[in-house]
Image (cartoon, rainbow, N blue to C red; front, side):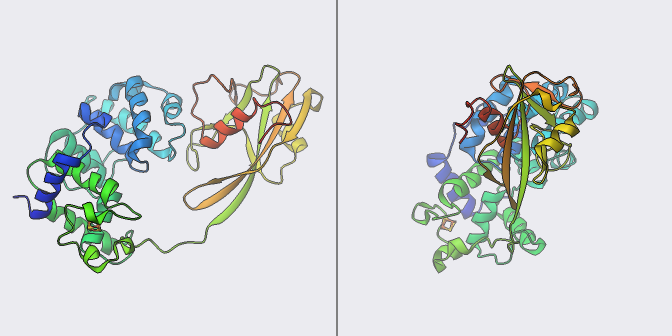
Length: 355
Ligand code: SF4
């Protein structure tokens, strides 16, 4: 399929203005593109880049990820959020080693059968790692195409997605598949931005219906908003005389699944109730102090985090190794959520100075 004028103008623009020094563009192996695409699913380029560099330095290939403990993978993902991505990456690496001889499959269909790889991510790997035509439809591309044709309807609806996929199919050229894929993502990220798109600098503004109508920010239409709920939970941070904190592994599914965290309990749980449940003798307690509540936002709700620090005179024998681990806040190799890392780091602040 010959490039249409949209693709031609986009590629000409990308040749001059496109991003060409991103870490995953330097050595475009299927593995590196896969890791980058998974990180970029929910994270912007600038944030993802240092995580990507650390990840591929520690795990240079699929086998290294498959061999690793999930804890090591989550540790390198700590702070990046959406941890199901890391769990799926780890699971998928195991499948690639067991069922594909350690080589990532090179078709969109086989890639799409792996955990965490959807239709657009599979296509992005095929296009960028193998240079074959494969239309993508990530968040950036949805925005560009929805504005260009003023595609109405919530972007999450099947009808809207079908229309956007049809447009993506129609514009994707046969040649320069990798460059086109990067170009259309770059346009969405740097020119056709969510807020205040730079239409004056846009290479495809001719033919853009939203530009002509003066209403680009109306597209794509957001899904109807559900009311945002607020939850409150207590986090008990046990600190031993050496400053080590107790963390326990969270269940594999759900928020922060598989990560480690100071014990989280219902907001009505009392200190005494928690210590009894944990098997900590009240005589071991040196000091109890509550720190300021802080709010952490998730996609669909907010969580008020209520920290309770319990300094102990000695480490209780009752806390078994399989129930939790004592970690040095400055030196550990476990995956902690952003909230858990903040709680543990605050244990280092002398009493009375917790902010
Ligand atoms: S003209 Fe504006 S709205 Fe249209 S694609 Fe370009 S940046 Fe987006």
